[in-house]
Amino acid sequence: GSSPSVGSAAAAFRDGGLSTANALVEAVEGALGSTALGRGDGAESPVVLSDEICLVPGKPVVRVEAAPGNARRIFTGIDVVALGCDVEEMVWATLTDYQNLAKVVPNLVSNTVLSAEAHVGARLQQVGAARLGGVATFTAQTTLDVREYRHGLPPNMEADHLDGQAEQASAREIGAALPLRDGVFPRPYSISSLPHRDITMKAVGGDFRHYQGVWRMQSLPGCAPPGHTAMRLTYSVELSPRAWVPIALIEGNVARTLGENLEAIRDFVVEQGECCQVEDEGREESDEAR
Image 1 (cartoon, rainbow, N blue to C red):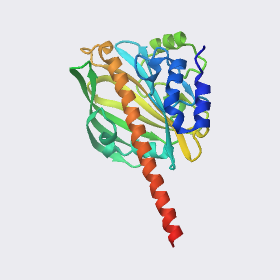
Image 2: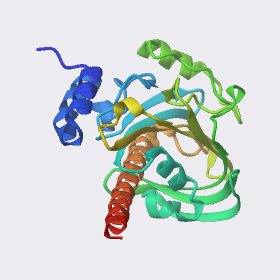
Image 3: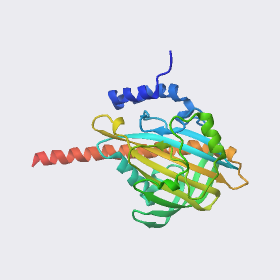
């Protein structure tokens, strides 16, 4: 028979709750292709994610597109569902806790806060690592300017968006011809009619000739089972290493590493949400005892 659609899988998830998540991973694989779940170059993954689609909690969606020169654009996204607390607020708090990023993001070998300003952003010096096969590791040092946009990026700082109906081939052709422009960030992977927040990261020094990306966070009230909150976390980045490193050598491993980072952030936040629920229940029992 034909593979179930992402929409039908999402509907079943909402109706059945978190216990159905693992059973639905195969259904989403059938609809999007195995590469969409982080096990390839994302050739069959969606061009963009709309807030009308609920991703089953599991592997992140990963998409890699060519860019002019020795460069790539990589798009990743994951849905995070947590019990009790406001999960979007928790993800935002995690990503803006600059001192402790290396405790959450697994590919960070080191993370030093050079300067920070509350509600504005920070300058970070990071060393990141990505595995190259079983024996080698690609490491890169980067100094990043990080900026917070609680109400989303201004339109002039986003590359032209593609709508959710764009075809795979045309999207790749557009991306391959779209020049890299400092301060104009790759289109966020998530198109949203809902309120959203963005955090940008732009290299101002280090081992990349060009590196800039944007985290996007948006609540997904229609994707949350009762008693839970749901949100989508996406990261879109364009990167070009120095001339002596061919991008084709590292793109798959960088994409895989970005997907692993999203999973780690999700796992951390879900665990914090469970702790929050326990604390809330403890307060309720204490109030009843009085």
